[in-house]
Length: 488
View 1 (cartoon, rainbow, N blue to C red):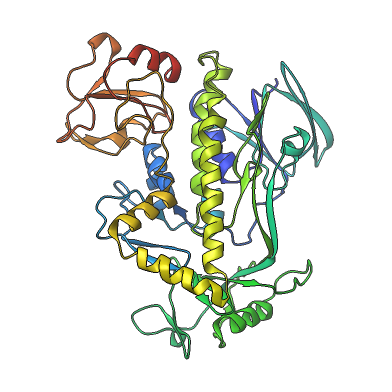
View 2: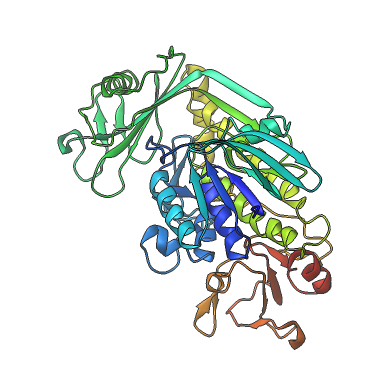
């Protein structure tokens, strides 16, 4: 039997999309080129609205091991500047320290529990589209085979075969002056300033953990989540590349010595998994959909990693696409619903490219960057500016067009996790991944079967919450139209 959807790529974005589809009754097939999960360091945590999204799906405890709702971070960083968020009021910058390889393993486990088939060592090599579906040629352990499917989602990374085969452009820029190195290392306690976790560098000051530390020669970052090894990374400009051979501990040590201006004692962790990247890309697909082919994650957009926005962007792409694609496959979707995936998420991706490139500029070495950093740093003294940066990093400045609903302040924005009586909260109403109609004031007639709830300060008389957590209607006229468009 032909699968309804094939997802090329078993990274976090592809796996999360597969889980979203399966929960709505669609059974996807996931194809992954690599025979085993990658071990190289990638993202070391989740940042932004995505942490709340996972809570709204009931996955926060599973991924974090923590009970209750997530809490906003008291501090973060932007381009190496500290962001003290304790004085800005309630803000949307949540963090979940979780290495990407662990996230992938837990999402894989969840996908298998849902009955999703994941075929590793299977690479899409050609794509043939028509009005009724997509035919793939896949190279795997059993040789080459053909698979017919209704829809194909390319979550196969920056060099996406799916994107290329669909003829989708990938414009943007590549800066080959930029070289990053990273690996998991063991750093002895005497290297640290007692009680702070900082590394003292005579003549340079202190290197702080969980932050890109800028020096005249580059930037360096290190972080550890609980006991065990550190993930240590350096970035340098105008350094020659060293070929395709694996990164060694000695090469990473030398990079640290150049950037920090001194040796930092370290040994390779048992899972050192060194990684070297030459160049930084800022590119975005010119469209996210070509007929029955759609793009997701790095296949749709690549950007510098500063600020850690990649998984926040990609997983929210998946949440936006999943319910729309399921409704389309099941014949429930309103006309044009699937097209809103691109119209809603493409501008968000463009925004991430902009602020990550700005961070690269602010972190660059050179005397001419100093005045810019001095000015930017002075702006961060203002609570309103720090809140604005937090919104930007979290992806909380997103507002979707929910016409024809009556304009309201909450319309098109993320539904906050309000405490509700009796004894629940918004994040517990959304676990099924279906639209939820919540009535706070008795405005909605009973035939609509709303959830009746009260909260100390209702943000609207009633709300229709889409499966991805955004408000499609916030009281007044237009409920019937909103239900037809967003809640089929």
